Image (cartoon, rainbow, N blue to C red):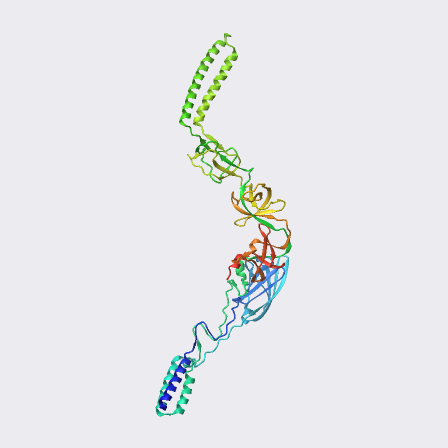
Length: 547
């Protein structure tokens, strides 16, 4: 009986020991502590700035890359003299282009903390910018153990299985010989040998791994929401900034509008009667063709009904008969003038009567053969109209619309009366600003709104009649705030507006703001932004897409 009890205990101990040797960390869990996030700087760098310049120095490949920008606008500065006080003495960096300079730096191989003094000279202005860079030392190569193969084999499952097989045989032999003390000692030894150290599964390891740094050519968003953009990427994005200033502004009201021709510099070519269109010599003028006032743009041939043709032929016959009678009378009068039987006045009256009959007869022929010319009422450009030869045009049909490109208006619709004393501007769908001058406001509502007319000042070549625009008119209330370009404001998916503040040389932070329209190019930041901050005005949309 004792033998069976000891066999059961040995079997239980063996199962528990084997289960200990196979413990692994399951997927998604590891006992190792979480590693800190990787640094965004792929290469050691330092930065400095003054009221004029902003400088970033990057140590890479045994050289110093210097990026020099204007502090207020973030514009790369070229044709500058950059002198650096290094451990090897003062040296001058060579320009690479686009505000980038390079300096060979063999002293970087030693590593450690490096203090530099950079002197920047641009024209008559110069500045001294001190900065420091921490260069990591090269890691020492660890020596391989002599008996590394033995250590690897000792911790392998094969070694554990072999040891378990040998000790298992010994335990069975001890059970047969009924030696409890030796059996207990064998179980303890088997427990120490079979207990394999717990290992993490693939993808989880207790040993700390070095943080993998990001590339110098990649922008990325950090956990706090800020965006790290290296200077080379800033040049690719074309980022530009302004220094904000507080002031008093008059906000504007946005109105929907569209481009219309100037009523005094445009016109329609219409048909007074119906008829068939025929082209003039050279063909119909096409869209965009410049024309002058009085040019023949088309001919209209009125249709003649059968009854009208019959009446015209009857009238022609009567006129031909009267012309023959008057001609014979004129011949007879001329023969009697010499004898004094007929007065000379009768001869002259007969000649005038004959000319009148002939003109009436020629007018009937012209009416049947010659079409009616359609003339340009003003000088300008053909904006609309594509007639076709043989086309039948009804009475009052618009054949052409002529517009003068340099004289265009904008018609806006407002729910409130517009005084017209304030400034006005407009913006097209692709962001082109327009300066407007108030021309008048209607007194009759149109679809519960008041039409307001503005004249466009400046170049209007990019505009077309009927094009939709957004009109901004001053409301008359003075507000305190910061004026920034519209391109600086980015709208998030939830409708929240924000701008990007340039907090350091290569870091940008989003700031939630509340804006009001100012004009076609700017908005008023009423809350969320302080004066004296650098705000991105060009490239903000690109920063918003960085992940």
